[in-house]
Amino acid sequence: MNYIIIGNSAAGLFAAEGIREADPQGAITVLTADHYPSYSRCLTTYYLAGDIEEEQIFLRTPEELAKLNLDIHYGCRVTGLNPEQQRVSTADGRSFDFDRCLIATGASAVTLDLPGTTLPEVFTLRHLENAKGIRHLLKPGGKAVIIGGGLVSLKSAYALRKQGLEVHVVVSSGYILSQMLNPLAAQRLEQHLSDHGIDIILNSDVTTIEGQDRVEGVQLKCGKRLEADLVIIGKGVRPNTEPFLDTGLKMKHGILVNDYLETNLPGVYAAGDVAEAWDFLHEGPRINAIWPNATEQGRIAALNMTGKRTFYKGSMGMNSVDFFGLRIISAGIIKPPQGNEGCGDSFTWQVTEDFYQDPSSQQPTYQSLILQGDYLKGYVLIGHPLQAGILTALVQAREPLSLRVREQIRAGKRGRVRFVL
Image 1 (cartoon, rainbow, N blue to C red):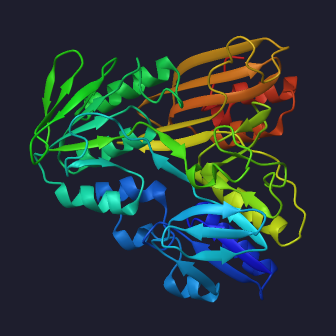
Image 2: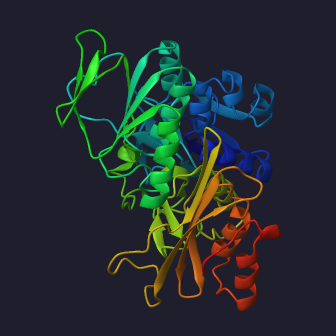
């Protein structure tokens, strides 16, 4: 069997390992536009912060990769896929035939069409090369502007602040982490980041990045000017579907797959941040671009590619992060759907919010539960979230909470947690 994997991040690597375990003799070709062996994109901001060294970002040692017997082509940009000929073409004019193909191209950072974005000190942060370029410019007393209030933006701000830079975060919406937190939780985090020297500017946009040969500052829509010698754009990501637009693949936001991670094209599968797979909470296809989902999809795609028919149960969104000792976890649906957005809206939605003092922590803890009838659909925890594992299991179980479970949750572990249900 001749396998091709397009992409070598989480989904691609776990797929390669899964294929090799199931098919020791099959030929596995990996085509990746990246120039490095598989590494964790989640760790790039920790590398920026100086918390880890470069070698710690890689997922496998050279010896471990060698045992997989992969034919890896680095710096290889795929430009097309011919489903009839079962062939993948690349920008350098080569072509590769396959019996089974996995598209695991991930996503790319969104760029902005603004004056000054081509200056050498303007970055997005998606690849190790980006992180290395940013780290080369870091110096105490430097001034950085982060454009965007999402997770990558705030993790970048945290990293640069730890390195001694003056950091401003410009957010177009009314609160940070709008895809992960509700407004009250975001306010708690905003105050914490401000206490650690990060300036957050809400309801604002950058109109111009100033400078001739290098970054000198940014101009905001409100007329305010911020001095800067480094700018990071963190305005989200887009699935890397462009090479496959003319292939006949069914797409929505990403490449649509079925319960076995198959696309509509024979022998072609998709996994990771490019795949739009089943979300069991929203009850429809959705991209949940987080590391555990990508690894799980890569593993299951590998089983199906090798003939071991394996059902993919679906995913849900979940994120966890720590900023200067303040832990934050959110999972599932964090805001009830508006109007007729699905999620089984025949039951009443309820959102509970509560602050309490955890005996084992000096910081007050915030918690929000999102319920639909008797079903726990999501949660937000800030401070000392010891109950995250229990709550995650309850969300994933998709079963109504019994009176006994409710009482146990209310009591919490050794009285640490109090839920308002």
